[in-house]
Structures are given as C-alpha cells and as structure tokens.
Image 1 (tube, one colour):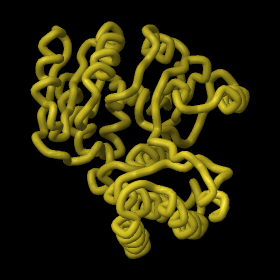
Image 2: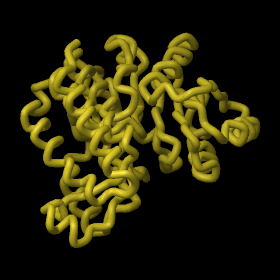
Image 3: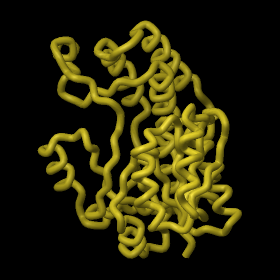
Image 4: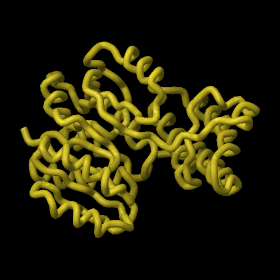
Length: 286
C-alpha cells in the first residue's frame, strides 16, 4: 500500500510547517507541498531541501485549496499511490497517526478515514463534551474537515475530485457529500486525535450581547473569505439537500450578517462581500 501526503500552503508559518513535516515524513512515502503563491516561497523551498521525501509543486499564484489538492492528487495517481493524507499548513498530527487509522478501519467502502480534531482554542469543558459525543470508537459520519483525512485515490478519481469553482470554503463538505452519494463511507477514528485550528475567534462583548450572537463561537474573516463562505454554503446546500435544508442555510446566512458588526477592518466592505456571496449562492445553477 502506497501512502502519500499533500500539504497545501499559502504564506505558512515556517516553524509550524516544519513541525508538521517532521512528524508526517516518517509516516508516508512522500509529501508533496502544493503552494498557492506564497510570499515566503523561498523559505518553503529551503525547508523542502532538508528532506529526501518532500517535494514542492509551486503553482505561483493562489488557485484555492480545491485546485491545489487536485493538482497534488493527480501527481500521486500518476505514481500509483493508494491513499493520500490531506493536511492544512498548521495541522499537527501524532507520530503514529497514519498507522492507527489504516489499522482501525477495514471497511471496503471507505473513501475517507480520519481522526478526531481538537481545536487548540477550545476550552477544556468544550473538549470534554465533544469527546463524549464522539462515539462509538469508529464512527461513520457524513462530513468532516479535510485536514487530517486519509483519502482513497480511487474514490477521489471516481467522483472527479474536488470542485475547483468553490475555491476554499465548503470544498471539504462538498467532496464528502459527493463520496457518500457515490457509495463511499467516511469513517472517523475517535480515539486518534490531532491538533488543528479553525479561524480566529472574536472576543465577545456588549455589541455581541445586544445582537444576540454571544452564545455561539464567532470568527473573524477577510471580506473575500466571507464572500466564499456565504456563497459556497448555499451552493452546497442546493446540491445536496439530503444533508441539510437550503432554506435554513439561507436564513442562517442572512442572520449571520450581524456578526460583521463585531469583526475588525472595514465593515462596509465585508457587508458588500457578504451580500454578494449570498446573491451568488441564490442565483447559482449547475
């Protein structure tokens, strides 16, 4: 069985990236870093030269995570690999991660085998509650973030890969839903945990209380990222209604506009991008 890994990078923290590579390089035959036009590409290239089984695919500009992953998968398919470990640039795995996943799940329909991520920003009480909810040990699920996934190359090929048009947000869930429709299973091994950070949380205050948004996690994003979040969630709900209501998601996106009031930067620009994303999602058709 040949196992490789793809790490998609965009202006990564070199120290964290090096830590990730140090751990993963012992667990797979080859790591391919697919870079989306990082400004610190010279540092990334210098890091790669320290390892014998790490290569870089320099895309020279930002094509998004979907295209980057597809580029990497295509090279591994050409080299007849069986499984690919997909990673974000800031994900840190345990040293025995890949072996524990492969040895735990033997189901023939497996399209993705993944561990259970723990966000370093979560409070201890939340981590405890989440661990309790993750049961049984090997859990068949219908969606999971892409980082930390072992993806079958055959499954990737069968569903025509990741959707380049989505660019970044919901690329993972769109791929998950495609796999399930095609008859594949997604399996999470709940006692194999890894560290991953999702977004920058916003400190809650008086404004969030006034807007009734202080009871859930709030994350800050750039205006362009907000566009993709709003557009892509609606697109994916249109495509896969069996995994969630489109109408509920539309209402959610409209209500989420309140969150912009507590974000940093130009709120006017973020509102414009948010509305544009919602309208693009409403008007989207295949």
